Structure formats: structure tokens, C-alpha cells
Length: 633
Ligand code: F6R
Image (cartoon, rainbow, N blue to C red; front, top):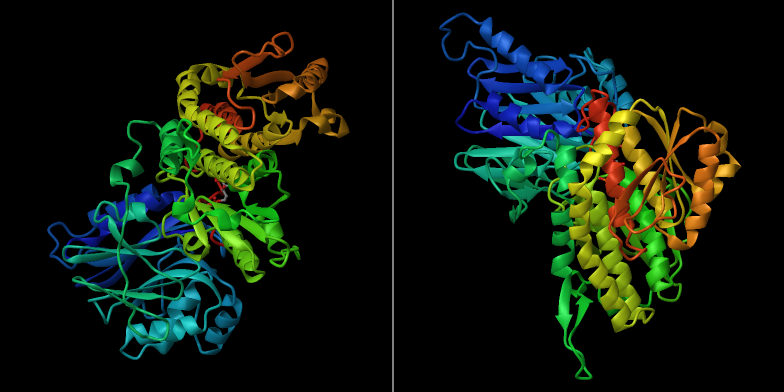
């Protein structure tokens, strides 16, 4: 995944592009570059490494220009341009592989997010036509193809070029001969456009635009935007004009800033109580009883279209990737518990290449729940499209309004988490869980597996979660202290049973992502079937213990760890004494309905991962080799 920005207006473009890229650095950060078009023509500057390396390079180039140089002679002067922050797919991170890429004559510049699948064929064809390539990227073919088709009309050249591209792309294109416009186009990679007085912008994601406008246009697949200084025109890929409406972004630039926290990850962990309230509250209502008894609390999902017509489903199928898949695993247990309905859950990359049995002719059909923070993950989108083709009814759980997932699903349930910038997902996970619980309890009520009283009790328990999360956060120093004693342990396991197994998987993923510590999760019952061979005095095992009927089993597992010299930590409720004698350390969470425990039990693990990352001198917001949303396979 990469980030692209574009600006055309009346001000110097370079600082605006660099600020936009800062907001997108979470999307990729192994190299960056900008192209600016001004009186001196098209100028490109790019650099391997973080954005700061590019900024330094630009500052150096400007400093080396002649003192008092006239306008137009400084490098990178101009009031329009493109920027890119890269996460390498084709070709290693290097100056030359960084974007923007240009055609042979250097008059056309292109930035690209996505993958051109037929790039090898196109490269060979262009070489046969005398083109000498400079980089190893798939993107460079686009610049040369546009040049090949260009005869004075950039829009037409772009339209002819995209006919020849297979794969995914969001593109920004400028041409020296047409200094009044930027062309942008997307297919399966996100792109938003926005306008402010006398200027127009494109970006891969909204935070890059918020400084300028909160009214944005989400481009649809194969749509083309032509950005002028005073307007934006939209076309389909056949060149017919398209009328588009702006969407108002409900969060502001401040929400996409660190707000006093050292890292976005810590800020976002702390935002969970509010994010959970925002996700839950609008969906709860007071309902009058029909028999004259007291009003009761119920879940209202009719607004999003989840009405009684969904109640006859024969099965729930869930697909997602990474953390969102872990949310789906919790969802499986929740649907089984509240709805007593068969549930299948799979990672989207497996699901899409299986031959899954989805049968709309089954009594009631399948509810297909697809979960994605970004709403743009390539495998997740492919899984959804396949399920749709097979006739399943699709519910999307996503955090990004207007994302591809949101637009293609039959019904969307938003996680109102606000922008999640840190690469490691935290508040998106817990709000995804909240959405799944809301849906499960509602479906249970609609199908009669939960009566009004049981549903109201579940809602009451859900309403207590944000405050309980606040309490865990207020005790974070204990986790910080534990991390400062344990962060050198490089063999870390999480184990649990049922809901706790799902949280164990998420905990291990969080730790490995941001601290690079090798951590794995296993279902506690599996300990003897293999993992125990790895336990020695260098091992830390955290047991997540929130299912009281299994406390004895968990305690035996902990004893087995201790007997082999391992260190055992436990995450459990504040009133539980079952592990007092065995565990080396106990992290306590407020008591809750045991089926809702993942909403709380994951928080200590998120904090532990964060502190280990910081203690190991790493940047938890931007772990190596990872990108925030994986828009390519
Ligand atoms: C982990 C993480 C990833 C994502 C996964 C899916 O912290 O962030 O595992 O959960 O890449 O991304 P989305 O939810 O955007 O589809």
C-alpha cells in the first residue's frame, strides 16, 4: 500500500504535498517523492527512507540553488504537483524506484498506489518500442504508456492507457504541456478528491485533505477526476461526464493528530472508551412494552437495514484479514452464544481461493459478514465480491465511510472509531467487536433465542464496557512496569480457551507487529499437543482467563508452564482468586458478562505490546515491513 497526494492551486505546492504525505505516511514509509510543475517545468525529487529523508533532500537542493535566485529557478517551485509515500512491492526501496515516475522525456509524472498485474508484458512491449526503463517498478510502464498515447490531450491519453492496465491502481498524473490540470483515476485502490477556494486536491485517504476541506468526493471504480484550480470534473472510463456529490467528513484534522500522546498507537488505545460509546450509543433505544410493563432497552439496527428480513438466515459466514479476522473469531463465539446459529469464519485470503459452499437457496440463506477497518483490503474485497456473486447477503463492518467495502456491501455497519492512524489496529478491533455483539444480540432477539429480558441484560452489560475500559487504562502503569521487566523475553505465548483464545491470537499479533518479538497464540487445551516443547526459563506465557467454567483447566495449564521454568502472567477479572497461587503476575479487568470479555481483556495486551515496542527503541506507529491497509495481494 502506498499513499498519493495531488495539489493544484495558487500556493507553492511542495510544502502542501509534504504535509499531505505526513498524514499518509502510515500507508507506506520506505521511500517518498514529489513532482512539482512550475515555470521551470516539471521537477522531481525522491528519496529512499522516511519522509524526513525526502524533506532533507529538498531542503538541501533548495539551499544549493543560487542565493537570491529568481522565481522559477529554484528547484521544486510551482503551484501544482504530486506526492507519494511508498511501500515497496515491485523493486526494492531505493531512490530510483520511488515515485513519481516519469516518461522518457520527463514531461509526464505519475504516482501510483496498487499493482499493475500485466506490467511485465507491457514493459516488454514498450521496450520493443524503444523505451529505456530506469526503475524496476510496475508503475513506470504507466508513465511511458501515457506518453505513447499522448498527442496533446492528457485525459484521452490516460483513458487509452487505463484500457491496457490490469490490476489495481489509484493514479495521479501531471504533464508539462497541460499546466492547468491534474488527472486522477482509480480502480480498486482508494482515492478521494476535495476542493477549497482556488485549489483542488486528491489523496489516498481523507486525513491528507482535512487541513483544506471536510467536503470530499469518493471516486468510484474506474472514475476519472480532472482537477483544475477552480473546479473538479468527473468522467467515467468512456469519457462521459459523471455528476458526483460531496460527502461531509464528520471528524476533523485534530482527531488525526497525536493530541499530546507520544504515539498514535497509545492515543488510539486510549480512545477506546469513547469509540465504544460512539459505536454503541446510537444503536440503543428505549422501547415501550406492548403489555403495559416498563419500557425496555433494545438494539436498533433497522436504520442500517438490518431488519427482521435477516432473521431467517440459516447460517452466518464471516471473512476478514488480520486483526479484523480475530474480531470475526470472537464474532463466531458470540453468534453461537446469543443466536444459536451455525457460524463459519475464515481469513479472507483463504476464503477467496476455496470453493466455499454458499447457498442462497438454503432455508433463510447466508448472512455474510465482512470486516475491515480500512474497507480497502484486497483479499477482503475479493472475498466479499465472491460471496456476493454466490448470492449471499452482505453486511460490512468498516471504519471508513465511503470505502469500497462500504459501497459494495448490501448493508453497512460503521465502527465509529474515528481515524485509526497507527499501523497496529486497536480501537478498530474493539469497535468491530461491539458491532458484532450488537448484531448477534439483535439477531438473537429477532429469532427468539433471547427474550426481551435477556436482550436488555446483554445491552446493559454492553453499556458498562466503556467505563470498564477506562478503568483498565487508568491502571496502565502496572502493565508498563511489567513490560519493563519482561521486554527482553523473546519467546512469548498467549493462551486461552473460547473467547480467550480469539483474544490470545489478537494479543500475539499485536506484540509481534510492534515489538518484533516472536509471539504466538494457542488454544490452551493444545499446550500438551506441541507448544509445551518450547517452554523454558526464557518463555513468557500470558493466560487470558475470563471463562469461569474453565478456570480449573487454565490453572492446570499455568502450572504446566511454571513447572518448566516459564513465567506466567494472567489476565482475569478483579474478583477472581483462582490464579493467585500460580501466576507470577495478574492483570485485573472489571467483571463483565463473560461473553463480552474480549472487549476488555484485549486492552492489557495492547498496552503490553505498545510498551515493549517503546522499550525496545522502536516506533510502534510504523512497524517495519507493514502498511496500514493492504490494498494488494
Ligand atoms: C493488525 C492489523 C492488520 C489488519 C489487516 C486487515 O494490527 O492492523 O492485521 O487488521 O491488515 O486490515 P483491514 O481491517 O483494514 O481490512
